[in-house]
Length: 210
Image (cartoon, rainbow, N blue to C red; front, side, top):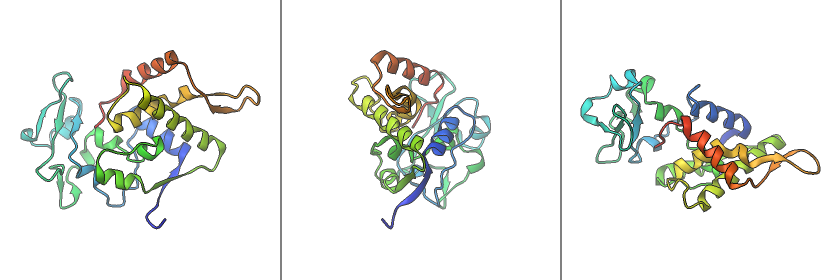
C-alpha cells in the first residue's frame, strides 16, 4: 500500500517503548511532521517533578489532574482540539515537552491490534507496518496482541484504548512460555493469577497515560 509507513523491527521497537515507559528514555517516533496526537483533543498529564515543562506553560492552561495527588496537573486543548503549545504546526516547547508526550507512540495501537479512539491518530496508526526479521519478533508481537485480547475480554480491564494497548505491552511477558515439546518460546494462555500479578507490577510505576 502506498500509505504504509515502516514502524521498524518489532523486538527493537518493543524494547525501546518499554524503556520509555520505565522513564529511561523518550520514544523515538518517526513522525515526519505528523501532529495527530497534538490535534486530537487530548489531555496531557504533567507531574510535579517536571519543573522545566511547568515553567514554560502558562498557569491558566493547567488544572488539577482528577484522581491524582496534589501537584499533578493536566494541560487541556483549545476549541479546535489542539494543544495550546502547538504553534504554527510545531510544538513551541519541544525540548521541554511533557513526559507524557515524550513517551507517546501511536505504534502501540497496531502493536496491540487495537484501534485508537481518536480519528486522526487511528488513521496514522493504521499506516504503520512492523518488520519481523526473526521468530522472536513474530512471537513477541503475537504475545502483545494476546495480552490485549485478554484485557479486552476482562470486564475489569482498561476501557481506554491507549491504556489497554500500553498495558498489553507491559504485561505481554506473562503470555510467553516454553513449548512443551521443543522448548522454544511461544505464546501461552496464562492463568488469571499470573495476569493479575503482571498487571500489579505494571501499575506500580506506570505514569498516567493520555
